[in-house]
Length: 260
Ligand SMILES: C[S@@+](CC[C@H](N)C(=O)[O-])C[C@H]1O[C@@H](n2cnc3c(N)ncnc32)[C@H](O)[C@@H]1O
Image (tube, rainbow, N blue to C red; front, side, top):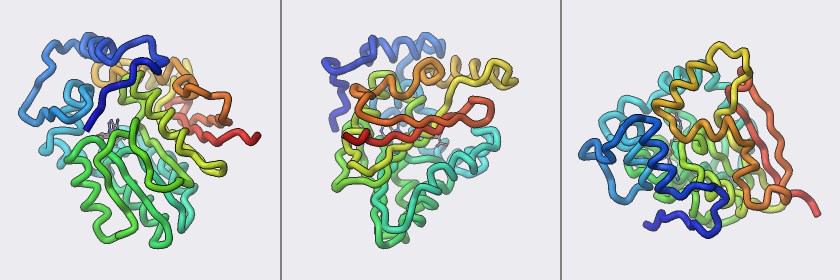
């Protein structure tokens, strides 16, 4: 697989190498290689920053549970998932750009049903193995080993959803993922981003989240700073509807093609 960023079209002022160096500096880790699970086919940030969370099969076994998602999202998991699930109607074609721990992918595919198509992409093989098991009894649900930044959906999609992916990837990838999702939106399709957002100044969790970002999520601060439309090369061609929940900690952004 080819994961190299196309630097000629990047809006981010940083190259991928600078993004990674920045992440390492923030996380205070100098060593790029941490254990044997390190996989040369993954985007470099997966091995260098998220190896423990998404790549190491032993950890993934422990983490892939609803209670983990509920805890990480401070109990907001169901309302954030509902924002996605309620948009799915039977018979739709849905592309979910990355795996999510717990039962979300299963619930999404179930809502699509046998008259529709559900495709889940992910860059990490162990994540796809877990997803495949969850979707085994639903033949209309496909899993594909692919980067959300370059995957081409086989047909046009009614709904394309990124659920907490953007804050985890370097800026260069944010731009490529947003552009790729939008490029595949048909006239009446919708792209949905559910992700972190800058908390209101008074939010008691703001300092906690700032420390978590600093130590574990080095690419997340960018979604506090920038609107998601910043990552689109042609934002003016789309309508962007944002709503925030939990005192601004999370955002739900719906994007559609602007009608001519
Ligand atoms: C959706 S994000 C975070 C979700 C959330 N923290 C959870 O509870 O699972 C995590 C997933 O994104 C995947 N991923 C990271 N970069 C990706 C990319 N460029 N394309 C597709 N999947 C990607 C990882 O392999 C991982 O399975």
